[in-house]
Image 1 (cartoon, rainbow, N blue to C red):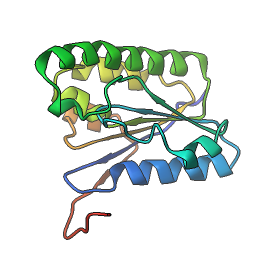
Image 2 (image 1 turned 135 degrees about the horizontal axis):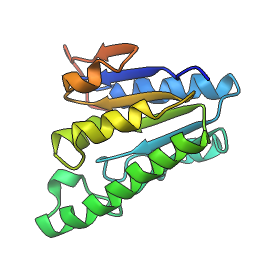
Image 3 (image 1 turned 30 degrees about the vertical axis):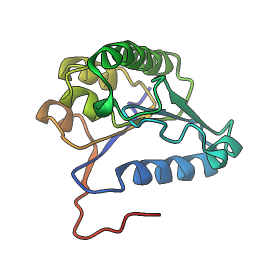
Length: 165
């Protein structure tokens, strides 16, 4: 079986998650099974009625229990959420092992390495286990050890942006 592709959207600019979700929608319209696992996003897209209407073609998972951004949590809550985040990583590993989807989006997974919740080796091993599943990774910082695994890397930098109201 051919290895799936690895695409990465990273950088300081806005739109990394939007680009990944756009690719997820494209894959779903082509008949692919898509899973999105969001990390470090607070409520993220969990309550999105739009994404719920896209099920079962696009399925969204979020393992963190808090509705707040990870950085804003007190230290005790961060420890609790770290366990939940690790459950999300284990879920992603299971999905890749069983081939449950054609495209797996790991939204803000690079932030887990940056915050030392997951080490580079663990993320690298996860990506290398992909078999035929395509993967999209997003985040702000991109370690060299992960960059070399990618088929395509897009750096997203803001030149000017407007905050949506």
